[in-house]
Length: 411
Image: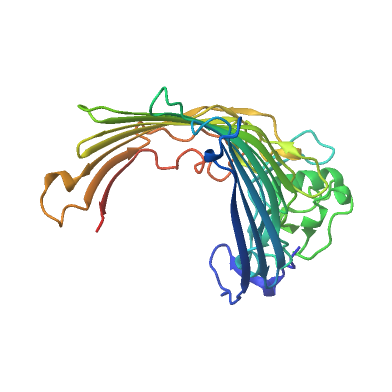
């Protein structure tokens, strides 16, 4: 981890006092080839069309090194253009951002931490220690491998109907992040030097001695305990799931065009390994400090009606209940139910082209909308979201109902 001593300070309780003057050179070579193995004109029984797309990218980053990233995709139409099968696989490479490598470090107070002292059965609540974190020049690149497989179906017998399904699987390694402070504290308090997080706890200063036995965090004054958790390469993440979509469009001669669609996203598993060598924990259906909110499934449905110069749309989001498990993983607390959530958004757009007011108005359109029309607030997850009480990023924000007016002009 980075050495966070007084001379490295760039942030002290938020104000920046250290400018960043670093640069990076990136060089890349990219090649792609699309090959129609069998075309629809060849009339091969059982094969209407078969094509593949192959890509390769080589990159060089100063301070980081080289990466080679391949990608392959196959599309197969066995009967006609109504039904298609598709498959893709690729690797990816992410260099640490300059800010993560050389940006400011920080000191201050830790998050509010709940932990049980070694040998005790009485939990300590809302405890704060000294804390330091920030950039780390020793960060290594993060890598990933992903693959997807799915199909698309648009039957000619039902004009306007389309169905798609895609299964995905992804494995990330070396994710950039900081260890969860509550997990660090409980693990080190229970295991001492045997904890995989022992190196993140120091006594006296940010470079002071580390724990040698269980119970030493509770045995020191809170002001003498330093949680030094800069950005590091965490363990891995394995995600498996699928997306499905059904859409139908109907165009009438008298009352306009209608389009309805529903997408459901489902996680079969969402496993996270916080540190290399530790177990993977499944976060599906939970809210946690480690992974925020990972609902097992989520739906997003839309209805659009276009009539002359008007377009009206309605959107509905539904997220089922999850379990608040605090930090999650090895430090998970007893599950607490988090309520389900749904949100309605409305919009009405008017295109001035239809008024024939002249060329200055032809590209103008106005839209009036309201997001979260029924003013639903994110459900509370007190143990997982210690700073905000709810996952405002996942549930549509913290402001409730939002009314807006938007003007667009094209020329």
